[in-house]
Length: 336
Image (cartoon, rainbow, N blue to C red; front, side, top):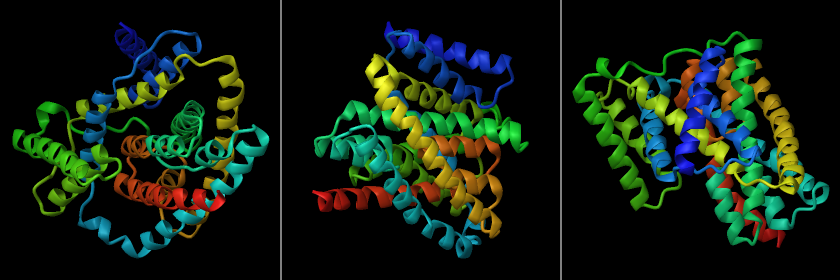
C-alpha cells in the first residue's frame, strides 16, 4: 500500500511540474512530491530493485553517447579530470569540521558525511566504521536533492539553457534490432560488472559495455525516451522517500547540516567550474555538471536533458567516486 501511495504522489508531482512548465518534470516532480509527503508524515516506500533496473537504462543511455569523437577531447579532459581529486579534498576539508565541530557528529559520521562520493558507498563505509547510517543517509540525500533541484532551475531561468530537449527517440521510432542490442548490453553489462564486484555495477557495467558496442559501430541509438523518463521517475522518488519517517531533531540537525554543507560544496564546485570554463577546457554546461557535487545518475540525467555531453560529465563523476572510494577508507584509518 505504501508503494502505491508513493507512486500516486510521484505521478501527481510529474503532472504538477508539467502543468507549470517546470524543468525536468519526470525527475523533479516525483522527488519534490515525495519529499513534501515525507515531511508531512506520509508513509512512503521505495522500490530498490526497480531502481537498479532504471539505473541500468541510464547507464545504457550514457554509454550510447560515447563515440570516437569523445577521444578527440582526451588532451583537454586529462587536465579537467585531474582537478577532481583536489575538488574532493577541498570539499572534505570544509565539510569535516562543519559536521564534527559545528553539529557534533562523531568522527566516522562526520568524515563520511563530508565525502562527496556515491550515497550507497558512503553509507556502507560509514556503517563499517561505526557511523550513524541514518544521519549519513539524510546528509547525502539532502546534498543530492539540493543539487538536482537547483541546477536545472539555474540553467533554465538564469542562463537560458533549454531543459526540455528530448532525451531520446519515441519507442516506435527505434529499430527493434537496436532495442535488442541495447537491452542485451544493459543486462549483460550489469551481470558482468556485478560478478567482478564493481561498485555501481547496475549503471557502470551497462555504460562500459554499451560504450564498447557504440565504438564498434553496433549501436546508433539511445534507449527510447519512454525508458529514460521511467528512469528519471524512479530515481526521483527514490531520493524523496529517504526522508520518510523523519523526526524534528533529524530535520533540525542532520538536514540542516546537509543544507549548509551542500551550499559550501556548490560554492567550491563553482570555483573549479569557472576556472575550467574560463580556460576554455569545457563548455559552460559541462563544466558546471562535471564539477557539481551531485549523484552520478542524477547528473547524467540533467546532462541528457540539457543537451550536454553526458559521457564527459559521467567521466568526471566516475573519477570523483573512484578517488573517494579508494582514498576515504585510507584517510579515515590514518585519522584513527
